[in-house]
Image (cartoon, one colour):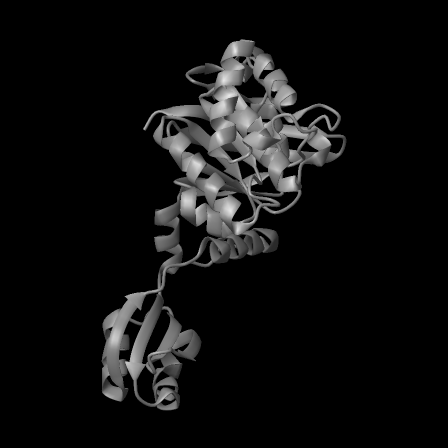
Length: 314
């Protein structure tokens, strides 16, 4: 798939602090790309470089097939984590102001904004002052002005912060709709459940370095290796004793149906068929499935291993 954005060996230093150290990534066009990492990892610095707010010390950024320039900024919509609206202005006036900065005429801006305000159910706030908006309302306005001019690349930094579940779902659906209409999205967040829901690919940065890149589904399968979930009827303590030499981790629970579930991780060298045989010899096996690793588990495992100087466990 063709990339709309490529970052090649980008480094950036502030004083004695190396914020980015030879970071590379490639964002396929028409996808949602997760940019992940703990606080202070270098994500914001990279986003600022992509937005042409600051320049890298070395390396290159290519946008839509050519070296990134200031002229490309009009084709990038950026919603930063730290929001900023002028509190004394009316909501509609401020939205039109930002739209005009992105190249829309006043007539175009008002027409498009009215559609978005209706979609987000905030039309009644058009003539109210920004200072009267709740945090969630203000974030809706900033999301709208970010996407209004239909840029090729959208960058959302913690877009769900401060939203209740209903409005978070609304925003998620709009992000996916924009993707379906051809937009490419870079999505920076600490919410790993959101990553599983909407991201196609991710890059994980830690201490200024790229430590993991790949397709979300493929990474979850890779980190699932040796992990299974078993439902059964029978004596859990007897099964635990039988499987103890075969496992590195186990967790039991009783389901509402009365069946028991065992989540486990096989020790190295133990075959799946041997596990199934041992279970069948001890209890009544109801179901046997790979336990898909969560992005939260992958994040913690990979960052922890990176900090310890080891390879992540998969």
